[in-house]
Length: 168
Image 1 (spheres, rainbow, N blue to C red):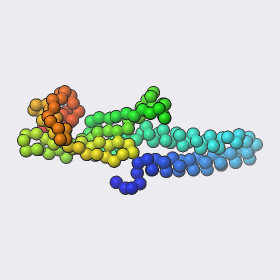
Image 2 (cartoon, rainbow, N blue to C red):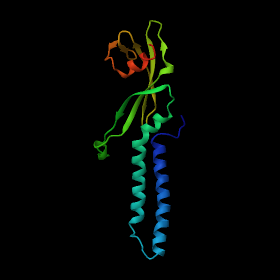
Image 3 (spheres, rainbow, N blue to C red):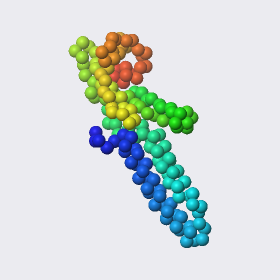
Image 4 (tube, helix red, strand yellow):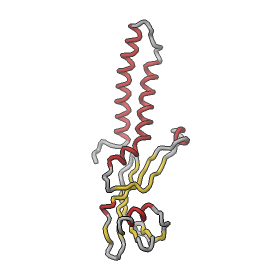
């Protein structure tokens, strides 16, 4: 991972969109003035602001699909988490995906006791990705969190079904 990622790249992207919108709006204002139909003075900052808000909103709502598109075929998303915020009231109508849990099926390994160890990647927007190892007992339908005890889970648990359908 490079040092240029996360919220910093989002801010720089938004500023670049703002600069591009400023250039386009300035050209449009100049053109309309030449044609004798001048736009109001507030059109320039309004156009820039709308372009920046539009880009930031698109970037936020498309983040998860862009991350999932970059995953290898052997990786599977097992869970998604949404984020709502009072600072962004529209997220209460339709919350964007802010975090995903991914299993790389090819990276599972036996634990020597008849169980499997699955590596689960927890990917969250604007945060570092965290990898945790999850014990999987396909025959008994149990999972063991890191540093935890075995726990029985539902037969349709996404970790269990993802790992055990490969033959456990």
